[in-house]
Length: 49
Image 1 (cartoon, rainbow, N blue to C red):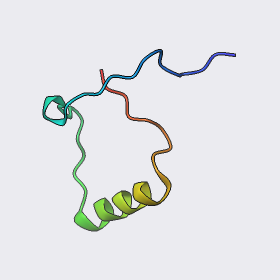
Image 2: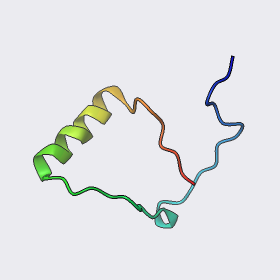
Image 3: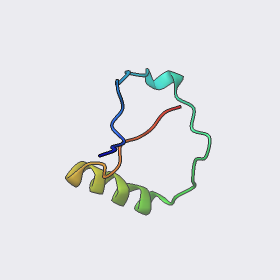
Image 4: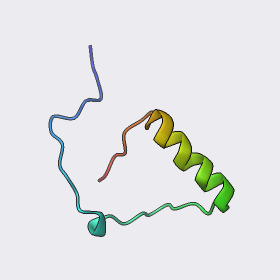
């Protein structure tokens, strides 16, 4: 069985992360997304390359 589990996890300092495809969202939509993540977590982990 093949999984997408990485072999290792590396902590990346926030100041070294650059978002290349950011999206504009109004504050209401943004807050809904934040609350959803807070309540149930992320459905798919964030991948950094």
